[in-house]
Image 1: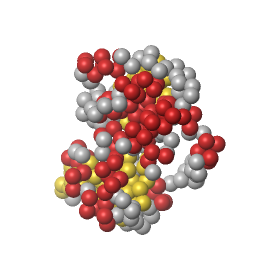
Image 2 (image 1 turned 60 degrees about the horizontal axis):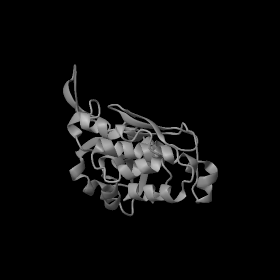
Image 3 (image 1 turned 135 degrees about the horizontal axis):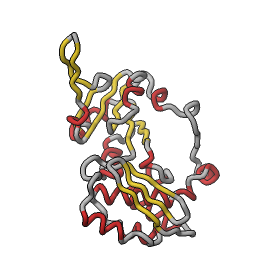
Length: 232
């Protein structure tokens, strides 16, 4: 499991261990702030994150003041998406010492910053693309790709109805929406798969990567903001 590998790495390699100062939960993201001011974030799934249950709040209250590694141990068996978002955000916060250019270059990774160096829409130009998760990049990618499919756990949330002088029509118009359970045939015919890091929170990343074996996969988003080794 990717998160298990990340936790093992931190246990083995992290020598200065900060304590958890604050945890923030809202409908869009979870944030974890450490005492050394390092911070990590993870996107949330839409259901339940705006008004978390009292039992959940009590559970994360027990993490405040713990050192980060002990916090990860407490979250080792987390399966609920909200608890997983806390776990991923904590991993991201604790990963900061390993996210410097100097450290990443020693592992053979290439780093680049800015639009001039890295643009997903140019990387998939004229390709058939599957995007896992409907996000702000869909229209931009669709403007360059030959064909775009978007998989979602709840695709009905992203349909739109357009009414104008020509009558009625159904959107989105830039991509074809498909349910996540039906995605595998589309993975097979895609040139590239663009995978949101939020699949770490839904617990679906490993399964998707297995179905995309041999394909070019681009993982994006702040949720996958830890050192890259566990993703490969």
